[in-house]
Figure 1 (cartoon, rainbow, N blue to C red):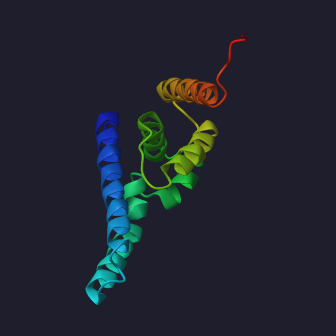
Figure 2: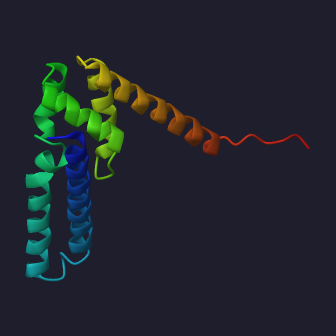
Figure 3: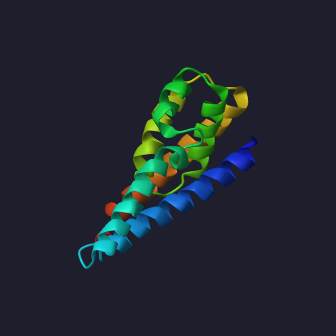
Length: 141
């Protein structure tokens, strides 16, 4: 699968996870009103949890971290695409951090090393912007 296809898949899966997570919150609001509402909420939770591993990361997230360190080329490429895309869904920030650390210890091709370095530069830029927003510089009066 090309990196373009991987990134498209990552985006589509992230959208699906966001929608499932939204449905959990939506059905939660009405779960105690009727028996059907309770079952709808429960079914939505089951669907989210049953599909999370496969939707969160191409090939499944549970085994991905070990596959990355072992040098599985598909897992490494998927991880770099995930880091480049930085999708947003439930727990994706934690995944980003774990993948970042694991890819840093994985065997990379020259192209992957270049792309990973770009991810690190963007992450550092994001951190500096975030830090400035929290601690704005005030001018003396």
